[in-house]
Amino acid sequence: MTLQEFNTLFQNGLSKQNAGLVQLLGLCPLLAISTTLVNALSLGLATMLVMASASGAVSSVRHFVPHEIRIPVFVLIIAALVTVIDLLMNAFVHPLYLVLGIFIPLITTNCIVLARADAFASKNRPLHSVVDAVAMGLGLTMVLVVLGGMREIAGQGTLLSGIDLVFGEQAKPFVLHVLPDYQGFLLAILPPGAFIALGLLIAAHNWQKARAEQRAHAAAPVPA
Amino acid sequence: MIELIKAAGRNALRTGAILLIFALVATALLVFTFTRTEPTIERSKQAEKLALLTQVLPPALYDNDLLASQRAVLPDELLGTRHDSAMWIARRGDTITAVVLEAIAPDGYSGNIALLIGIDVDGNVTGVRVTAHRETPGLGDYIVRSKSPWIEQFVGKSLTTPESKRWKVIKDGGQFDARAGATITPRAVVKAVHAALNYVARNRAALLAAESAPDTAPDKETPP
Image (cartoon, rainbow over all chains, first blue to last red; front, side, top):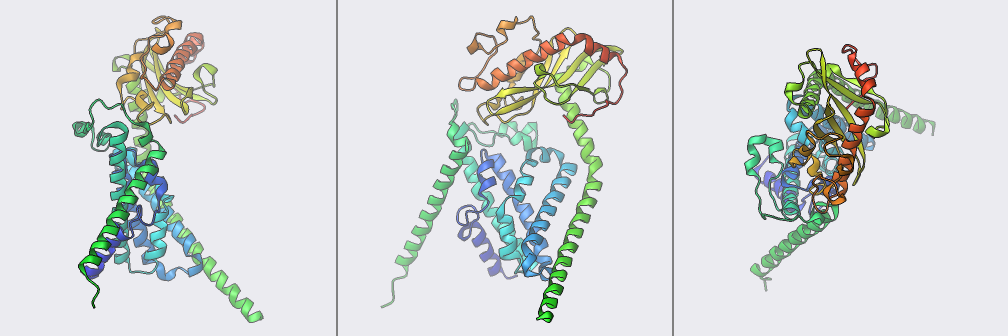
């Protein structure tokens, strides 16, 4: 794999084809879980892990899967992998499982995992597929983190609340009370707040893209 | 024509066989992971349950194996249960010191609130914990101990302190604290704890009779 291919995959995942902002895939967990920054980051990383292993597995067996049954086989692979990860986490990293446990089955419902398996991993070599999945997962995680941060500040005036659930009691001082004595803004925590915040993010992303295009246009004058 | 049908049939058989192989491999993988992780998961589950029980019982009250003391309780309106629930018995030496009951507050803001309530032989509450709820995050969820110490105010309360008409939130003329804007949730919890105290008072004789039997595995195991 060349450096250029690597860069292209990451550019696609983080910006051009960003799962949350451009493809608008996997919105169900995105909107349900992004109530706080810690929740959002945890779900994002767990999704990335599942995507990377699912894409790697799908890509390794792609020559044995007839075209007409590829979707059932991919769903089977993803569901089996998610269950295995769920069981392994429950057994060996139990404290983390108590926090992420409820999200893991949600990942199966995230269509971005199947979308990457079908659109990319079934046509590319395993290494490329894993890198693509990591890039896509990272892009989704970034959106989730920004969304979670926005909703947490607007909704309860804090950042990083619940970090003690991931890192234990000693992490409690890390909770930032951004807006002291804040009364809370329920709308930001409820589902409509998620839609509004995501809308703002998409608008910002489009605006930035349009500006970049405009600038590129101005910088390269049309040859006479 | 017949050749064509034969070819199609062979193709379908081949595709089906491939799907079957994938299903078998996935099943084998799941069975392997499940059998390898099950003992560890079961241990963590028991430890978790014990940790929850010790949160509603002061350590000075018992020296028996709490998990082994579990037995089934028939459904009762005062407990808000519709199916058998579980009960644990705390002993010190041979003397029964307290019971821990599962109860349901059916009238939360969004559905049932599952509670674990410890009550000592004198009818005083030793502790209450919420084990499952769907109250609004950031608003009604302060009943959970990890979010706020609200639930600790039940410790030491009984049917006589305060008297029955004061077993209400302050807003309704009682003495229990509740946050402005989220009164339905604490109202439901206060009512459920009061009802559980009534349940123990009314069934004291039956409970004590059942308790005097030595600890044996309950006939009907009920999941918490």
